Length: 472
Image (cartoon, rainbow, N blue to C red; front, side, top):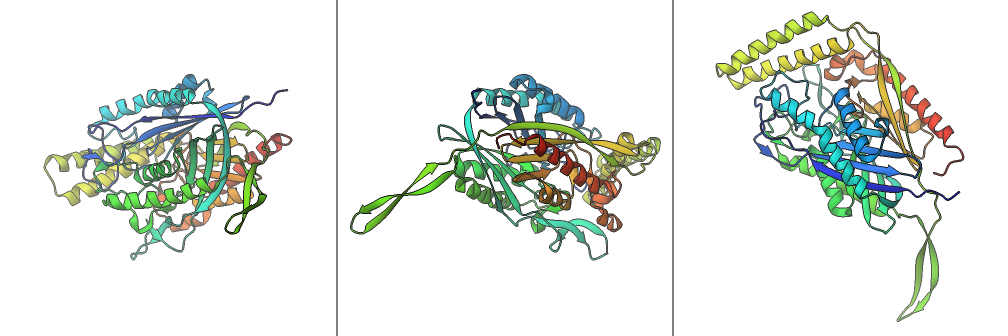
C-alpha cells in the first residue's frame, strides 16, 4: 500500500470587534467601551491531514466562548474544510482585553456584543477555507524550551485573604512547547506554541483592545521564523504575569509576549525538519586543514493525525436557587444603573460593577449546574506524530497539567484548558481551604482535579495503545 503523505495548511482572519462592542469585563473597570486598538484580535486555523484523518486547530484571541458558540464554530470550520465537528479543536487564548463573554448581556452595547459573537463562525470558516487553499505536503519537529516570566498568582494578601496576585513560591509550568511544521519545499508553514500564563497583563484601567501577551508572542514568533503561529494555552488557572499583572502599560504587555516569543522562536529554529545526522565529509585543504562536515536527512515515518473526544464526569458543589440568584443580579443591576445615571464617583461605580459581575457569574452557575451532582466536561485529544495536545473546557490549576504531562506515555504532551467551551476553575483539593476567587467561583467539588488527572491519563494511555504499531 502506498504510504500517505502528511499535509498542513494555515489561514487567518482578523476578528477585532468594532468599538461599539463592550470592552473586557473586569469587575473593577469603570468604562464600558474601548477607546482604540493596541493589537488586532485573530482567528487562526491550522489544518492537519495524514491522508487518512484530517483535523483542525482553531485559535481565537478571546476570553471564553460558550459550548453553543464552540459548536457553531466547529460546524462552520468543518463545513469549510471537509471535517466532522468533532475533528475541530476550538480554543481561546483566554485574553481578558477583548470583548467580554456573550452572556454578559447586562452591559450597554449588549446587542452589538451578540451580533459580534454570532459573526465568529463565518470568520473562522473563512480562515479554514484559506487553510484548505494552502494545504501542502509538510514535515514536523517537536521541541521544548523554558521561560520563567509566569508567576503563581495565589497570593496571601496582608489582610489574610487569598487574592489573584503574586506568589513567587507557588508552582508554575515553565515549559514552552513548540510544534514546528514546515512545507516539504523547506518553507516555514506553522508553529504551535504552548505556554502557561493567564493573559491578564492588561487590567481594568486599560481602555484598548489588545490580544495581550499571547498576541505579541505570536507576532514575535512570526517575525523571527516566518511561520504562522498558533497558541495553545496551558493549565493556567492559578498562574499569571506576576508583578506585570493588571497594568495599563502597553509596554509591559509587549515585553512579556516578546520574551515568551523569543524562547519559542529559539526552540523552533533549533529544530531540524527533517531530522538529520552530522557526517564528516572530508578534510578541505586551505590555509589551514578544514574539517568539512555535512548533514544527511534521517528517514522518519509520516506523522499520524488522530483526534479523540470524550467526557470527564466531574463532581459539582451545590448552587443557590435560580430565583435567589436572579433577584440578587436584578438588584445589583439597578444599583449600578442608578450610580451611572447620576454620575457617581468612579470608586462607587467600580464597587457596584464588581458586585454586578459576581452576581451575574453566580446566576450563570445556578442555571448551569443547579440541582446536579456531576457535570460531563469535554476532553479533547489531538495527536500529531509524537506529540499530543490534550485540553478540557475549564480553567485547570497548573498542578493538574504538570501531573498529566509527567504520566503521559507520549514523548511530547501539552495539556491545557479553554477548549470546547468554558466551565470555570478546577482548583486542586489542597487549595479549597484557602478560598479565594478561583475556589469561590468554581462549580466543582475538591476531588474534581484528581478525576481530571486520572481521566486524561487513561485517555492518553488508550490513544497510545491504539497507536501501537503505527508510525510516530
